Image 1: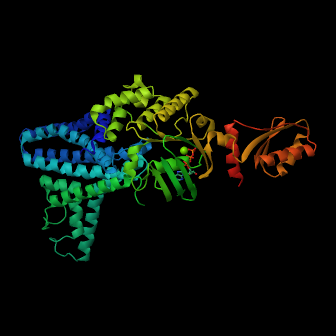
Image 2: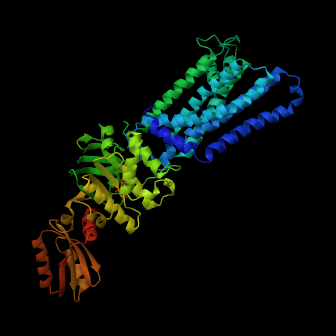
Length: 275
Length: 309
Ligand SMILES: Nc1ncnc2c1ncn2[C@@H]1O[C@H](COP(=O)(O)OP(=O)(O)OP(=O)(O)O)[C@@H](O)[C@H]1O
Ligand SMILES: [Mg+2]
């Protein structure tokens, strides 16, 4: 943490000063809040009857919406950190200081995640509206919150890696959004495709068994995992009897790959690295 | 103390540095001069630990830039040819950030930054946002930034480029002050006169090679084998130009007003032999003078020579 300090302080200053940060926060809450209130208005008659399944529906929608926003905001913030400095020609000078490349990467990651975390926490009161109606346990709410933290970490690390790899901030941002799309939709399609092909092959005749790859893909797809947390059950096949439960696979994969990406970013940032 | 030995660097097919060797002793101001694309920035980036060399060694105070980059960073201050500043930070915060980046304790920042701002004459801009500073001010701020950790060696890549004459003079004054503080300074430019006043030693870089080196006086006239000579004749100018280009030792002949400017290579005796020959041929020579003091011409002479080969 001490290594990370100067860059962290500077990033925080730049990020939270001025109109940009409150504006993003405002828009973020407006999108989420507007959506929730709009939906509640549409089903206002049914809400009066205190149907817990209705509030579960709102909860699910809010969670998915927040996941989508997270996939836009987090890589959007990290993908321009290093490449942005490169574009503005401030990176070289930074690299001639005593700061270590890894320290620079970590500080920039922390400051970006701090802002995303602020968005997540600011959105918590919206959930309380749903809690009032019942049907959702606080445990479920915390589960979703932990899911966001893990997801945010990998999303941020992906942006970070793109940012050290690509010279231009625009290309870095577009590429990281592409990877977000692959994680969010690509993995599910791939899982569905492989699952279907396997059925035809009759290698897995009984529906209780699904291929390893399908199991893995559905466990790393944030949308499917979120649906699972919300009580939807697995998308493909029955509850798997893997060594680890689905959420542990997700957490291990996301944290592990995230750490690897950050280590790689630190390595890439070293101007004298061995080619 | 900077020691560069047989440094080579290629980018694809471009040989940016070819066996560059030079050494700068402590407390000296060394000017690296060369036309665009000569390899000045490449050499300086290698010294600043930002670029790995292909072969050869570069030592700063005895520390190898590729083997001990972190130690080297502690003792050098680097100012790139092009740089930006962060937006949303004040001048004070900007310098404080770099001070922290060199692990200088927070409680020392106030004094340090005040001293630095005084040195570069930006005291009244301490609370202005850095992105609102003028180009000249940014340049001076960058100089102050190089100095936050009080490095012994400074590597300044064209610190005066793009500045008006007044701002350029200010930058020069700052470098003079740095010299009086005992710092070793490596500074680059493509304008020789700009460096003449402040440098102890100059090196002329051309196509990645050091084609000339020595004190400023030596480069201008002195022992250099290449000289610029102005010849003026009453008549038969065209004929003489033709004749001169065939003489031995003459590298290049240009018309200059009513006379000729030739770049001559050889000993002084050969120079007088040339004059004798001109007179024997019956040219009405009015003036035959070695041009001294013009750095611009010396620069042209030396780099021109490199191109002809
Ligand atoms: N990153 C790079 N990729 C490819 N070629 C490069 C790179 N950097 C420099 N070069 C080439 O190396 C040569 C030397 O470039 P360098 O920037 O060192 O010149 P310079 O002396 O600083 O020129 P200037 O006076 O224009 O700043 C040039 O031919 C340039 O095209
Ligand atoms: Mg240059």
